[in-house]
Image (cartoon, rainbow, N blue to C red; front, side, top):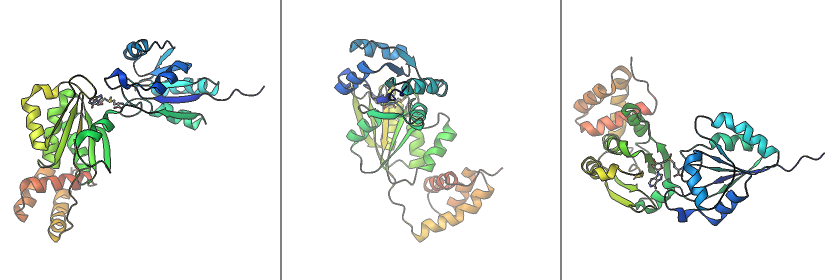
Length: 289
Ligand code: SAM
């Protein structure tokens, strides 16, 4: 007997706040799928109810995605269409989905995007910062040391940076951005996009960090942080000389001590030398034991 044609995996974007942002195509796709794989079935149930969509739901979250993928791929292979949604926005973008998409594609199934809301793109589009080249860094690590290392690794990147952050860490994260990227860069914090209290705060990084420290409202609700990229680093004799001075010190000493010594020897500002030391260490060298 001939094999039934394989089903299709639809990756369906859902609203990040405003239900009016569910596209017609997304609604029709959800209505016609055999099954909907949802990050949190309890979270998605009200959305689906609102649109009158009654379909079997399967949970697919970061802790069971690898186990669930083969079963869903088997359903695709048997000819069923599967729709994938996450709690909000585009699945697989700082959300579950990557493993299922990969497994479905590897099994030769068609994977189809039903595009729509994505907080990163929405924030970038209204931040007022260059959009021609950008780097999406998702969530930075929760621990301060790891977060600073990740920031240092992108400190010289001239592309606009786009970051997600959870509300309770926003102030701490902006403080680290000031330390590692410098106070002067232009940035935007886009909060509660598409919702009633939507607000975009624009300013220098140090202004936004002190706003976050003073105004508890800033740490309420969901936010995307968009930061101007690094100014092209002048490959001046001075910059090369600072690297030549820092590299052997970093190989022998803890970062802060190496930076302090290099600042004293070169006469450059502590902050500037510290930032460069962080970038050099992030670019390769290990912390000395
Ligand atoms: N997949 C989602 C997307 O396409 O945007 C992102 C999911 S990620 C788990 C959640 C993060 O997205 C939040 O911590 C916040 O940084 C950002 N986010 C989601 N909804 C938002 C909104 N309405 N306004 C601002 N940021 C939002």
